[in-house]
Amino acid sequence: MQVKYLDLHRQFQDPEIHRAIARIFTHCQFVLGPEVAGFEAQFAQVCGTRWAVGVNSATDALFLALKALGVARGMKSLPSLTPSSLPWARLSPLGPGRGSSMWARTTI
Image (cartoon, rainbow, N blue to C red; front, side, top):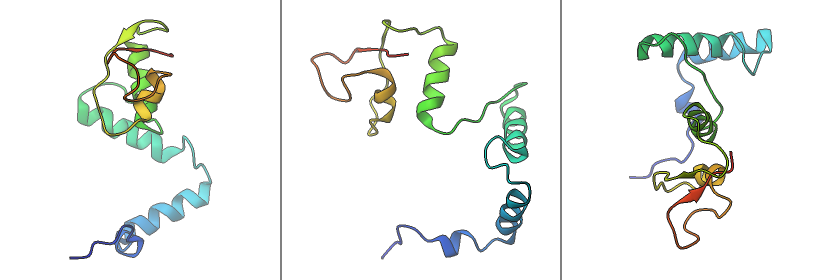
């Protein structure tokens, strides 16, 4: 079976997607617009919390979580081993898989 890498035609068949795109282009708030505020409010409700913050990447989410926990520059942290090197880019100037230790000095 052949699976298309990117099938935008199939992804955007839902008319609600077209309405949402038209709404965003009407007010032109592509960053931090009402759709983001709505998502954050709904996500907070689902999680049973008062607030939620939408970020642009998993790397930024990791950065904010570490800051919230009080992790600071020079402290040792042990991130989970993931196939992606992006979280490591935030945590270690050495990069993934380099050096003799799994411990990474944070660069926050």
